[in-house]
Image 1 (cartoon, rainbow, N blue to C red):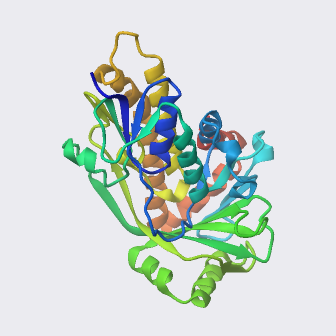
Image 2: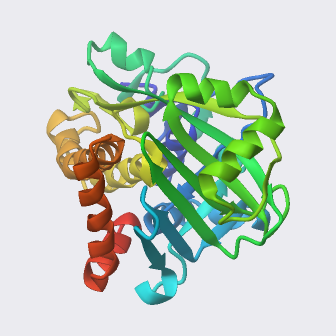
Length: 368
C-alpha cells in the first residue's frame, strides 16, 4: 500500500490549491513545494475570474487576503491599433458585480502556503513520496513530466512578458486597460498596491530584444515609453517596483494523464498572457480534478487511468480553445498588412455594437 493517497509536486499557486483541494476530500496528501530563498520581490499580479475566486473561497483563502491585495475590475477598455477602434466592457452592463479581480501574486501564494501548514491531511515532503496518484504541477519545465517521457513542444513567440508595478497621478476606479499594438500588447491592471486607488500592475508583451531593453533601461526612459504607448489614458505613470520578464510560448502536453499520474497548470498547457487566463486555466484544472476524484466509484483506485481520462476529456476543450483564441488574437494583431489591420479594427468595432456577443464573451472570461 502507498504511503499517501496523493503526492502533489510543485511550488506555485496551482500546486498548492491542488494539495488543499484534494486534502478537503479526506485524502492524505504529500506536497513537495518549497519557496525559493533570496528571490527578488514578486511584481506579478494575477487576473482571476469568478470561477477561480469561488475555488479560493471554498479553500478559505480568498477571505484571508488583505483588502489591498485584491482589487475588483468594473470596466475594461480594449484598444486596437487605430484611433477609435476598440471595445468597452462594463460589469454594470453585463449584470455582474465585477468583471474580474486583480490579485497580488506573492500574497496569494503566501496565503496558500500558510493554509497548507495547518491543513490536517497534508504533509510536506522534500523529494516526492510514494502515492496512488502523482499530481504534477511543477510548471513549464516539469522534471517529473520529463521523466515520464511526456513531451510538451513549445511554440516560442519570440516575445517576453514584462511585469512591473506602476503609480498614476489619476485614480484607476477599477478600470483595466489594454492596447493591441503591432507587435506588442500592453495591459494595465488596476491595483491597490503600493498605493490604494491609483496603482497598476503592468503586463507588457514585447519582442524579446525590445522587452530586455525596456527591462534594463533607466526609469525615466521606461516611463517615457509607457506614456507614448498609453497616450496618457491612465494618467502619468511612474515605476514603483523592479521590472521582471519571462519568455512567452504556446504549448500543450502530448498527454495530460496516465496510469497513476496527471498534469495540471503550466505543466500541461501554456497560453499567451494577453487574456490573463493562465492561472485561471490552472485553477480550473484543480477544480475539475477534485470533482472527478470525489465522484469516482468506491472501488476505483485514485490512479486508475480511466478515471483520470475523465479529467482529461473535461479539460481538453477549454484549454485548447483558450490557446487558439489567444494565439489567434496575437497573430491577427501582429500582422503588418494594411488590409489585415483594417479588418481587425473593423472587427473590434463590430463586436462593440453586438451587446449579446459582448455579454457572452464576459461570461466565458468569468469562467461561467
